[in-house]
Image: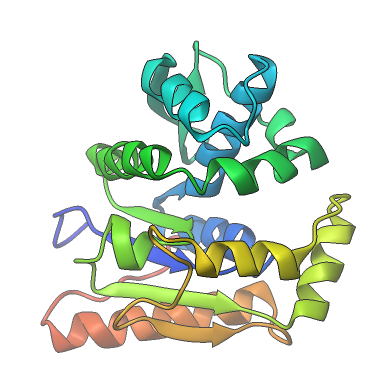
Length: 226
């Protein structure tokens, strides 16, 4: 790819805002890897539950985070965080993991650890990275920042279709009011309300904005590969 220096497309937003499906579609269009940072937090939450660590005890959660055996790998178009060589794809999507991650993600020591690990993902090349603080905290230097959103009603329906019961209002409040790296649009981010857009429409809109910014910086535009 021209202009081969690795770059990050940062996609932030609240729960069920479409970050995951949009990130995967955009990455597939451009031939890039995806990073689901929420899955990393969920993996730690699942590991806490597995090790019977109280997710409401910040010190115990932080201690577990410091000593668990993890490894980053690039496979199936994604950068994944393995625990003891295993990626708990199904386990991290349960209602139990969803409830636990809301507490785990509030721990400052955990967020500091995750920041280091998430920045290491760039070793695999250019990325489409989604989460809640990518543009504001993990890769604030990137030129490609987006904040996806949708109405609470639409997001609630999306969660229910996934078979997950989650109070999106409560999660939004916790994420936006936490002391460390709160959920909010980062400086320079394009805000996209996709309540009534298809995934492809959202991706097309984002790609147009990415190329507008690349043109302004005299960089070769990104073109779909699939």
